[in-house]
Amino acid sequence: MIDWGKVQTAEAKAAAAAVQARGAWKAQRASSVAQITVTTAAGNSFDGDEISQGRMARAIIGLQAAGDGATLRWVLADNSVIQATAAELTEALTLAGRAQAELWVEEGPDSPQRSCLAKANKVVAAKVVRPVLGRIAIS
Image (tube, rainbow, N blue to C red):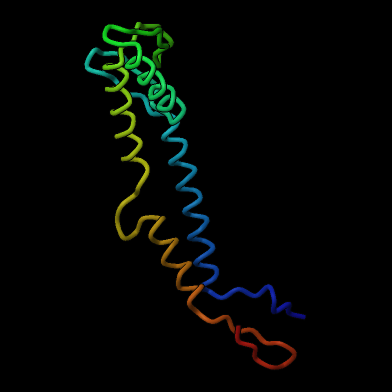
């Protein structure tokens, strides 16, 4: 016997596939963001992942509060240690933010985000038709 409650339309299957594709794209994006490294004009390479960006922002605030000439020890992407200034950390933070922004939004009509939303909206807008006890129920 067919369990009509489990039957999926082609549109529902396409929407589910679009959601899955978007999930895969988001996972890939997160992996790419986690691997960001940036190099400042001074030649220092900084980790640029989201956690590192937060650390840089907090360090910049502290260094600015400490005044001109303030530095702090910073571990670079290659694990070497430097005395970082607010200016260099600001440069690294700006570069990391730009790199993340490039990864964050995938443009174009065929992007997984746009495709997922378009297909999901079609399914929500469409009426679902299924037989119920020999009659057709529209919900």
